[in-house]
Length: 307
Image (cartoon, rainbow, N blue to C red; front, side, top):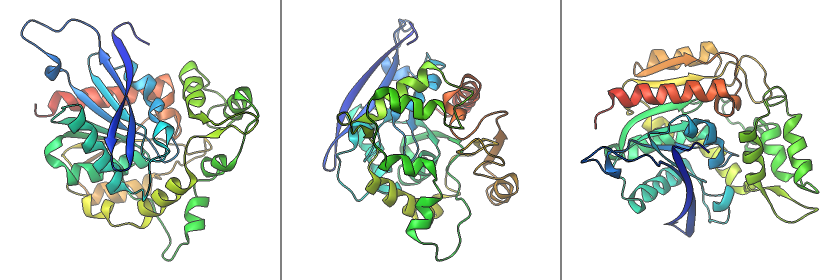
């Protein structure tokens, strides 16, 4: 943890219970006449099988900002919240979080499925959205007409398979991630902290905190629901989209292939697509080079966002 920041968690009342939210805030004294309301706030929304701890490295590169990052419904320490789960429900949970923390507006930053949630939030709660940054997410992926739920979940590959696995101890789960193709060359303390936080249950049947039911509901909604298509084109302009050239398994050309994302850029002039070199879908957040690109896009966007 940076000496310029303090990290804490809060529980936010939402439909069905409490949403766990991580908050990183500056510790430095504010200038005379300033108060906490003058600190830029970034709401950071994670992906379909992640938790708020995926934002550690990005948060540490934004010491002058307040980072508010929920464990989405069905994940992390919010995994007991009831369904149904959807992009709309997550967006409304984020709005409840801003209300609880008395934050009127924020820059909304979303990774993977969190990008889709961010786009829906910006549409449903436009008055709360100061700006938007998308990180390898938020724009629809190609999907075959009539595709089954099973096929949609299978497209997540090991990210979905992991949710049904059990592990005898903490070290076994750490080792699972150490040899994962996405992280084999990028292990660091932030990844270890993320992995440890995700683990719940009791030995010898430890497991990921993400609910299979929530993941399935969200995947179907993300690919086939109407909330994201209805929201596209209504987000702030310009909106930076950071693209990872490699995917879940460190494989090219990434989830959003260049030709596919170019089609969306042609349809959505507000979309400012930028490729981040030498990262995959995970390390675009959880490596130093990825976190540097994301924090840089956030700072650039803050400079031009209305206050």
